[in-house]
Amino acid sequence: MGFTAGLLGGITLTSSVLYLSLAIHQRNRIHQASLLQQQFLLLTSIVQRLPERPPPPRYVLDKPSIVETVKDAWNEDIEGAVRWAQGVKWERVREGLEARVVGMWRRAKEGMKESP
Image 1 (cartoon, rainbow, N blue to C red):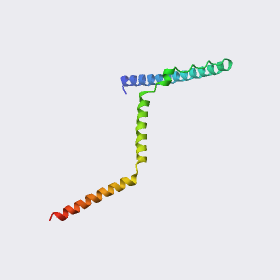
Image 2: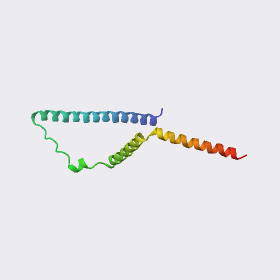
Image 3: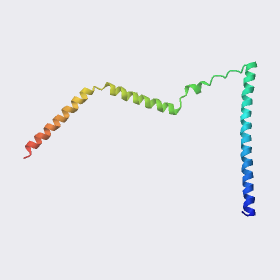
Image 4: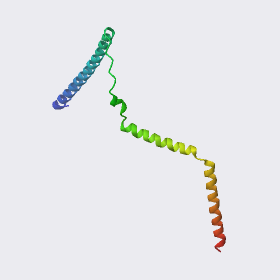
């Protein structure tokens, strides 16, 4: 290994170890800061009650999103289709189809007899 390769390898190794250690240290400090904030809020809420949040504005409660509107329309269509399928007399549908098939079969037989 030459001088240049050894120097670059050493610099790379040193800088990567330094970067990783600083990143871990920063994450630990952020975590400690959030823990301290939580503890502070907990301790101050024992002594002083936190004010309750005001209710959200009425326009936020009343206005559904476009996605919700589309979902409601889709659900109404599905409910209508299910009600229609439940209201159909399937025996009558079967009997009607059988009658049509029998009629077509008779016409086909009669057409075969008349062709010779």
